[in-house]
Image 1 (tube, rainbow, N blue to C red):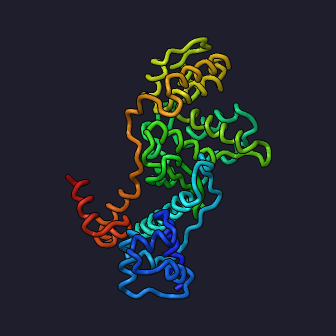
Image 2 (cartoon, rainbow, N blue to C red):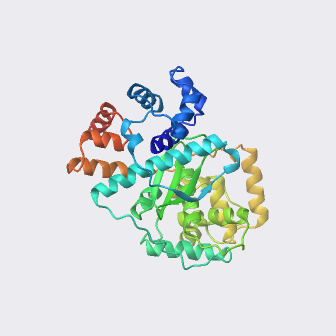
Length: 350
């Protein structure tokens, strides 16, 4: 009963609900007090109540018998101050649920879960070290100096789990480790250029080696920003596109670079400043103009390429095609009812 209680608590948090919210969703078939007793392991629901709970929480019955094996460590949120406690718990609970299903699927396929940080030995002592780290990572991952066409696909190809969640607009992303594997969670509703930058910013939190107590949290955020920019446009490519020292930059130039590299105009100018290609005054004037145009919160234009997490579903289809799992099990792993999964499968095949 203790495991059922923990699973119920997690399913409720996945929906962002209080006990009273869950009771209301079930038309008060069970009370808030009864839900509390279920979660504490003091009571076990009848089969009828269990079915009602599954329907309300949008989970399958086998969700409640799954053993908990995932713990998130070193969780780093972007824009944490803007998120409510309930929203934070919802994101964490959904991340754990996704990873439980992901690891189960990989175990079924015999896929090894292991990760080695390729830039762990590089200590970040100053801003210049960020480009060294980005260049070394591109070398170790054989990315070259070209545009990264799909950041999420690149991360997934290098054993990093990426989960896209439908969350509040105040949430951009988080990074964490689960069972020794790096995990990045992104808001699925973000524009693609923001999603790319956020994913690589979170990668900075996961991989960069910051000496203890050398930088403040705010400084680390800026360094992770710089790391994302350096990965999106390496120094040599940036200078080739942007030119050497500039005293003025047209907005149209930045728009072209944005569409080609999938990086915001603001991040381009920050990168130019970090590389010493524009003065502090030019940088300040740009942001004054940007604010006047109303672009600080929402820039015009987006990246022309694709940015979507697909590895989990691809593995699911492989397991199904090779008959490692049944159609019903595939639906359960994808957290769908069988009919919903069949419809999605048919859509993919069309």
